[in-house]
Image (cartoon, rainbow, N blue to C red):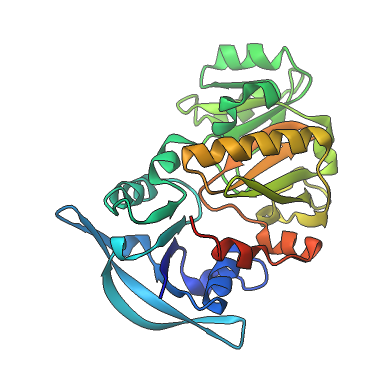
Length: 306
């Protein structure tokens, strides 16, 4: 029987109605795949072997995932390992990716540990600068302010941010600009992303899900009233949508490039036709997309041999 593992947040923390990891695990169990959950804290190295305490999972009543038993296994015993630990990509996450380098060539890891280390989700779009809005990364007060003076409105983002947390908005006439810059750079000791605001942000942003070189589809994330943050974790709402011709062109180009780089599952974000972020640690939005499109993408993904 095919064995796969998910290195992810604890099962009880997953929301059965919206969590992408939950949907993938449930689909795999329905396909008769032997599925295990691994907490990153339970991964060890014994010489050159990556081993872990693994929880064998079982599906009950089609909605409840329970732990059947705990077993110690070498990670090389799995056909696939899905690294879906939620951000931030901190030192612990970094060490987990290093340990996964010792799994061996017979196991496919989604996504490849090296790419998780190399691609910061806020900076990865810089590999495709022709699709970005004007963007500047720095901690220098003078240079940041000079950049802001060249654009109408600016979005300030922490490089290690996630879920819409820590984002600020400013412009060259903002009386609190220095206060905001000092706050987000921690007194100009940490680099930040300064990006030209995209007017279409008021209409929401699009999350495009990509798997194995194929564009699955997109959802529109719309901010709640009184907020400018569209992320679902920040109170945003998912709405059915379609890609523009430009968004489709960019998504298809990136999908092919991702596969060459060992990125099997990704979520890319658009504001208007501008590429904003590339999410590869734990892309979300799959259950919302399935609801809007009427397709069982989770089953399709789990049935794919990588």
